Image 1 (cartoon, rainbow, N blue to C red):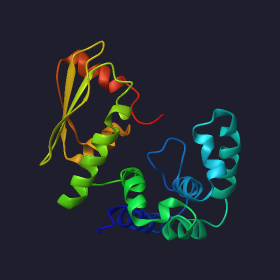
Image 2: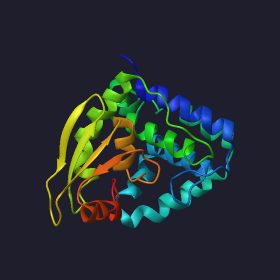
Image 3: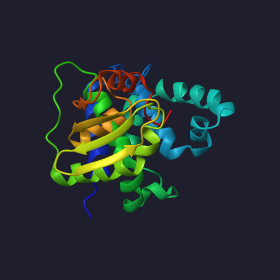
Image 4: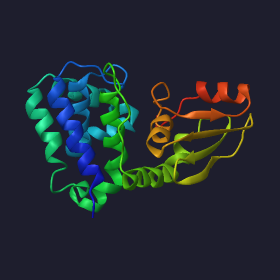
Length: 213
């Protein structure tokens, strides 16, 4: 089995090592050390990670993430590179591929596209196909706050109706699966996606908060 999630993880770690701890990312308020700390907590500290979904624990999560981010940066990146601990189901290759592919793809682009003179990577068709499948599974969640209907057209993959119209008509999003994933996860400003539809509908979509939050 080709482990795309593992490949994205390792490329992200290479970028984190190359750039150092204080470079910007597309994650608001986070530099590279903050992102590395987030990933370590996500896989290795479920007692803290639940703060992302339980508001009363959010303060504890943020305090620990900041403390961890101020520690040894090289060691932090090394922990991300090692992957999830053996007790975590995400350490299993199939679970890793299912739960971490989009996570590490998006965060790799969060780092790359926050730097000057970036260009989209030329991704293998197999990886584009995996991203398309993942996007179809999550699209209803990602676009739930959009007032428009959403039709996704993935280059080389076909089309997918992600959301029925609400207050507005439908907007068609065209692009490679990779770029559509970035748009769906709220990276609108850097996602190279074409939007087709009524101008008011497109404006409403552009203003909508997309992604998990």
